[in-house]
Length: 92
Image (cartoon, rainbow, N blue to C red; front, side):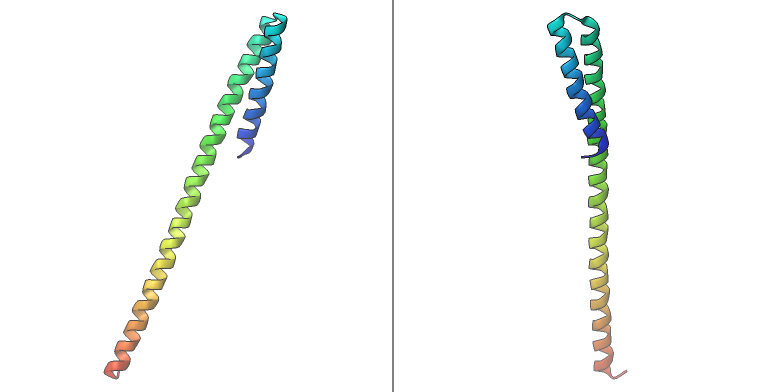
């Protein structure tokens, strides 16, 4: 969870509270302002979720790259070891 998600959650809750108070008191301005703050909060949360998803994809891609690199290094070590054994066997 990043700061956009947290800020969005707070704005959404605050907007919901303002809207509800506006409904109870009959204050249409409070209802409108609250609804606007809720929309802003939902947009911030959505943006935060997109950023989190992008971070997760990047993190997974980096770990896959590291895994492939380790596999390639292991294959190269095996190839060198087999080549060394072959040279020992033929006496060169």
